[in-house]
Structures are given as C-alpha cells and as structure tokens.
Length: 191
Image (cartoon, rainbow, N blue to C red; front, side, top):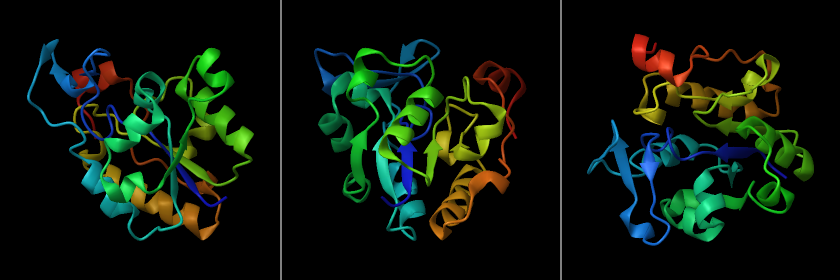
C-alpha cells in the first residue's frame, strides 16, 4: 500500500466545534461560543485538495468522528471529488467501533499496525496522548478555528508529504507548530 494520510475534519477542514443532529444530517453547523453560526463546513477541503495534487499516490483513511457517527459513505460524500476519490477506508471499523481506544493517536496507530502501514501521516488537531517520539507523524493545527488555513500549516503538510512520498523517514521532520493545548492556544494565541 502506498502512503496514507489519516484525515480528521473538525479543527482541520473547518472549525472544531461542529454539531450534527443525528436525526437531520443536513443541519450540521459550526458553533462559536456555544451558538450556531453560518460559517461554512469543509471550507478548507479545496486547500487540502490543492496540497495533495502533487502527490497522486497518497490515499486517505478517515480518522474523523464523522465516519464513526455518520458512516464512511456519508463522511466521504462531504468531500470534494478530488479528495473523495482518494478515500479508501476509515479507522472506525471492526473492533475499533465496539472498543475504541482512549485517544485518536491510539486509534490511528492501531489502524496503521493492522494495515501493515510503514508510510503514513496524520492531519489532525487532536494531539492528546500523542507520544513526543511520534509527533513527527502528525501535522496538527493548534488554532482550531483556522485549521489547515492556519499560517504555516499547509506548508508543513506539503513538506511532510514530500518526505513521506519520497520514501524517506519522517523521524527527522521537525514540527512547525509547538504542542499547545486548545485552551492555551485560545488564551495566548498561536505561532
């Protein structure tokens, strides 16, 4: 299998606080300070599509909770065609549905191991429980409102994908953004 990008949606392709009523999926909304907004969903999906264009071998595995809660097909349909065509699966299948690990890192790591992946990268705003010695495997915006549009994040992702697709190890990759909790980022700002 070629290189894989584990993709989260909330906090990456649009702001982090999104609520999707299970009884009416068409009413998904971005919330700000507890209030619904008219902010567009998937606003940064075209940016991700452009970033991935030079890397045609990269396939996507959805790590987003959208796939767990609403199903792979529905979650993938939210993406533009160029990204949707790259989606091969979700981490949310088999025992991971019934007995999910405690953190996104554990879910992704479990899935990568089960698939026998040696070349993978995650694009996810959730750094909870990512071990320090595995942070080279994730590009993580720390501004959960800007996500992928946060200054420097798209460049960091492009550089990481270039290394990943060259077959080189990501271990030497230095993360461009420090590890900040979302609360710290909101209070003190981000890089």
